Image (tube, rainbow, N blue to C red; front, side, top):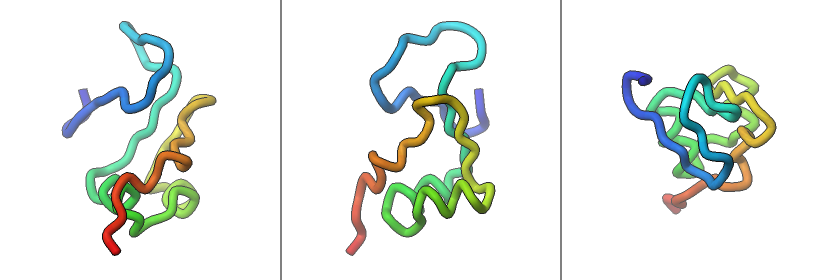
Length: 69
């Protein structure tokens, strides 16, 4: 388990063993910036702040989850 958390945040195939097929990895600060519209997904991926692998790992359509306007 990563040092902070591991969650399944969108519907998809059930996963029980090994490495999941679609993974998004980031640090807590980057996640909060993405979730609150302070950082764009494409910028985070480009800058290496997000590592997204798998055909369903691009969650940009689901962000931000909260606007801090």
